[in-house]
Image (cartoon, rainbow over all chains, first blue to last red; front, side, top):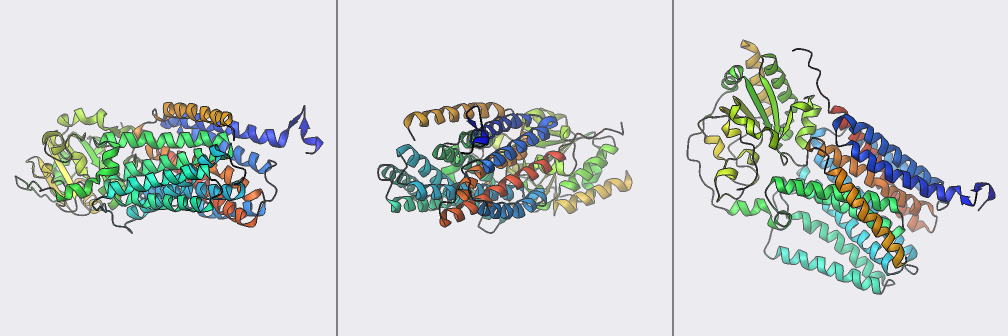
Length: 470
Length: 99
């Protein structure tokens, strides 16, 4: 170590590196705190990005790095792919984007684990091997699991849960085998075959875990994969003795877990039920209760008549709005009604869409002011004082059966009480039941008007009709 | 790694989980998608580990694994921060001019 780097016995390159990592950890936590309010969120993000820059610079200047060509190559490839992914992916594709990035996170961690094992397997003690084992297991599992989720969201893989008898037993057995292999590996670190087995089981587990999850359960699974990606990064921190990885991993793992719990609660289901229950498949085989009542179908013009007279309107968006990319059309109609003097608000169910906060992002993209977006608890009491509710591509989250029919598969799930408003306009493609396969009695209530067709087109027609005579 | 060292890392992990839980549970539902993109970007900190593997020059296989890991992690860092910022920029309160 050359003398000019030493000040008071401190090696600037080595201790400086560790110091940047410490600063980064603090900045990440402070930055995350900024997200508790939308006014401070961007500043928080900038702090975290600065922390990341510091950590990377510190690492590049540290003594551990002796050659730069592979690093530069990797950074160029990453930037060339990362910039378009950050800049141009449409907001409707956010769930896909997040799932794919979990896959990249899992891949990076798994590869680091493989390199560590083969470089140092003779030097590693039981704790290191345990950490590397967990790192590779979680990393590979996150990788394939997230790719599966990505495929399902994209529609390349079947969205319905794929189930077969004995599936749970099989999955648990595979998990138990993985842990057993890991235990033996800790005792015999030089057995490369064991390590490879662990890696393959991890890849397999990711597929097995997600293959049985259906579309509307995706929010929970994406959160769980987020959590696993975090835990994998934390395991890397243990293996390499780098605390910043442990801190970040804990934040990422914790956030995924908190969100997953939030989502499960919003569906009135336990984790176990989401992971082992395969909701969609079970409900499919249930005898369906048939409609008792008549569907009242209306034209866009009929809907416009209702809306012109309304003093207050609540819009309830669902996954259908994302599919139809109707968020701008929703905003246009909302603004038009506001000009007529109508109070327009938006009610967001926590599990509407395919990931937490999906609807909020889409409406924000369409320039809807965020103080018009209301969470379930804050707006549910207001439906009975509301003239018209507009349901845009939502189904299970507004199904009164969840509140009133104890036998229903979705009974107990908190819903938005749109049926209590004076009139309900439901925009829907067809009478097909929602993800849970449960018929929705809302559609045949006397105060409900169904307007069939593509939500974006229908909304534009309603807006045109409101404008014509308004 | 000694047991003692392992315990110190476990301390860090436990405290970070607690601090993280406190901070994250205060994030409103409104910002849950940006939260996921944000944590995704900072979990790209595994870039630090990937940089070391790619740059420590042990052998060619290890360097290649490291380089691929660097690419994957930097996709998350670069793309993650860009998309988080893009989303957060959209969350605006409208100026009520007509009123």
